[in-house]
Amino acid sequence: MMIKRAITTILMMCLYANIVLAKKSRPNVVLILIDDLGWSDLGCYNSRLYETPAIDKLSSQGVRFTDSYAAHPMCIGSRFSLQTGKFSAGNRRTKEYGTMHVNELTIGEAMKQEGYTTFFAGKWHLGTDLSTPELQGYDVTAGLNHEGYPGGYFFPYKNPEKPKADVQPFGNDKDGDYLTDRLTDKTVEFITSHKDQPFFVLLSHYAVHAPLQSKKVLEEKYKKKIQKQGLEVGKTTKLFDADQKMNQDNASFAGMLESVDQSVERIEKVLKDLHLDENTIVIFTSDNGGDGCKLNNRAKSTSNLPLKAGKCWLYEGGVRIPLIVKWPKVIKPNTTDRVVCNVDLYPTILDMVKGKEHKEQYVDGESFFATLRGKNTKRKKPIFWHFSKEKRLKTIVGMPKATAIRDGKYKLIDWYAIGDYELYNLEDDISESHDLKHKEPEVAERLLKETRAWRKRVKAVE
Image 1 (cartoon, rainbow, N blue to C red):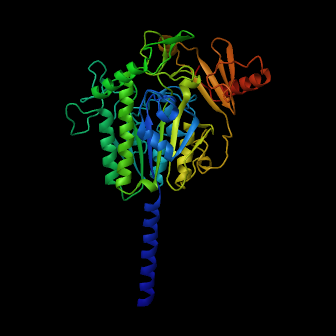
Image 2: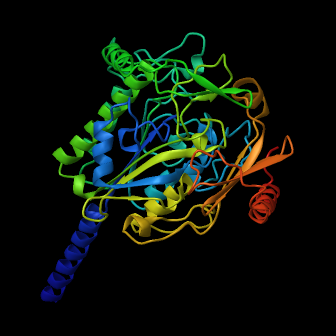
């Protein structure tokens, strides 16, 4: 009897040990989300002005995507899609929940169900009542506010004229503290204190969104570099009623981006110092295109060339974004033109950690883990975009209301508000300079019908 009990005890101890070991061996996930970072804004995406050595190094160690997209050309819709795995066109705001209903099973909640400790720092912008990160799957949070941008980047991170933009202090702030640095501080603290258990981190920087406030030393550095390059500062060209920025020539924006790069360097360093780097998936991306195409009296941060337009537009400059994924010993460094969208991050992350599928939730997302492992895969379903915030379009952006589709190499934009549409072959024409609707009418008609059927099916707000 004693022997039987001893054997049972040993077996139970082995089982428990295996469970603990399996839990610890699951990869950590660090998702770094930058606000308003354009596809052309990084050294590894061919920027000539901005210096991003840490992000470039991350790119050289992981998979860099050339054809990665945000699901919406503005932050709210894009962040909704990242959290839910759904396109945002059918999402209705409510007074009680804000921009995301509490019934959505977020990526944070899904990871928490998998046994991960979850962390969210920075910009949320999906609700301030019931749809907060604390109530939608995130165990620990830091640096939140009730707006889509910070009151300021220097302590106390406030704007007296816009109190909703005030960022919650971190508890031990001091004069001169910089918001990007402080969000990184809290992320490093979280990783350090949770190093012995699997964690999911979403570091959602407010940078490089306006207000454009850089550390002075970095701003002065880029003023000199801009002068040395002989750039024509402020040069624009017309696009509908808007003015498209032609040069990356804003020293404050450049300095803010270098601070973001320093943040990535620090995250990478703490993972290496804690010997977590080989078992941590690091994902770096943006929420929409760079802010570079608005009406003339509106500030413009960057140029997205060779892409057309910028944030709030359905041209490539508004929706094509950087995406880098690193996971040592599992995925080999590479560059891929596989078309992906940020609705795909939800199923891909769960696929990578061998988590439970939630196909009823991420209805528009598709895992691209096979692509990361080197297989030649393609997105099965088209990507759709819809933008109809009429007030913003008329008073800030200068773009007509529209719906768009990318299916394979083709992209069609349906300017339904003005009764026109455009067709492009993005493999040959990344700048969307040659409208093919008259040269390839059958393709245009097929995609136009598909776009309008989708808009009707999801009951998109027009």
